[in-house]
Image (tube, rainbow, N blue to C red):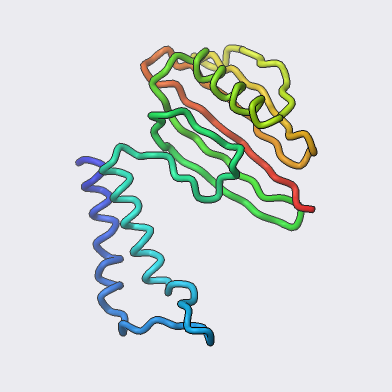
Length: 168
C-alpha cells in the first residue's frame, strides 16, 4: 500500500466523526470564531497529512522559529515540539538529495547570515554512516540550533535540527 492509501485509511474515521457534529461553532463575544472543536482540528490535521503525502512530504513550518531554515527540496520525516516555563524548542528531521558537504555549508551559511556564532563542525563515524555536527547560538544567547547531517552515502542525506529559544 502507498503512503497516500495509509493516510486515507487514517482519515476515514475522522471524516465520520466530523459528520456527526451538530454543525455549530463557538464564537467569542466580539463575534470572532474561537478555537476549532476537537473534531474540526483532527479533520484539518488529517487533511494536512493527505496534502503532505500527495505533495512529496514538504517540511511544515508551524512551531519552527524563523532562524530554522531547511534546504530547498527537503522531504519531511518527523518533528517534535516542547514548551515550558524556561524555553520553547524541538527537533526537526528531514531528508534531502544533496551532497552532505553542501547541506552542512547551507546550514552554516544560514546561521552566520542571521548573526549566530558557530562551533567548529565535527565529522565522525557513527555506526555505518558519517555524521557532521555543529551548533550555533544567537548573539543574545537566547536561541540555539544544533545541526547534525547524517551522510548515508546514498542519494539522500538526513538532517536533524535541534532548536531552543529561551524565554525572557
